[in-house]
Length: 343
Image 1 (tube, rainbow, N blue to C red):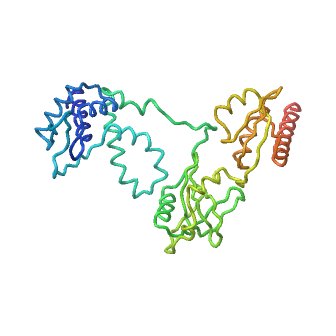
Image 2 (cartoon, rainbow, N blue to C red):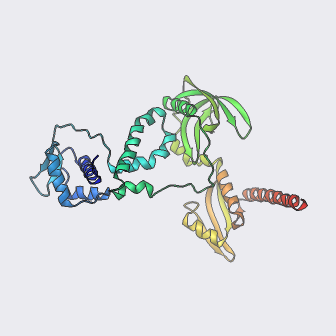
């Protein structure tokens, strides 16, 4: 087994080879030094020059010495495919692996599996000698909301939905509606798959209707692909659809939102504004916030989560909704206290 020092040198030289262009004028030693240092390698200019000389005895490398600074590149007409991955690629694959798994069909994911494994092995082999290889251990992305567990999705269900989406064909399914507590037989036109937090949604229309809806993937009970082409693809664009805040649920209707905020909450919201046109005005007992927002369930949940740190002023309908909800909640807590005190 090679020593850690030898392994590090081989890894560095492999990285060096992958940085070389395929034509003149090539890349200079200074540029190579900057790239390798950025990739986490501790190396000097002299070491790179020595590596290039040594590698040129084994690989078809050429140095453009007609001018200064010299440039290194692969010899013209030579086809060389390096099957390894760079350290940067290994770190990137490690960081995105979990995020892209629900979004790729099985056929594409199977092609990437060897690269994911290669990335893991490459980082494992470099961790002792290269701080950059330890980068995935130093960064993380966490969800800001309550830490619920992800729903279980049957692999065959996800694969069937992905196949229908990529082949642009309709599907027949049994779908459970949690809102109505009902199982329905549907023919769907799959338009997109979206990952929203812990939940994966199929964006589709239910024939013969044309309104676009969201279907939680974990609620599909049976899925069968059909040979009939998907309808509505020409008029659907995912980016435009997402820009309407459709995945915030509710009716994405624009409102002019005004509310009283506590001083503490105003400091926080100043750092993460509600919208590009948000305005904060100081009051004697706090602040008033004004912003143009979509009137969605997500907005309602956010308002309720702030408790007495926020009081809706406008629009009047939203203010009444929040008042009624909080009154029912307060009444429920009051009844609970009566039950506890009577025990």
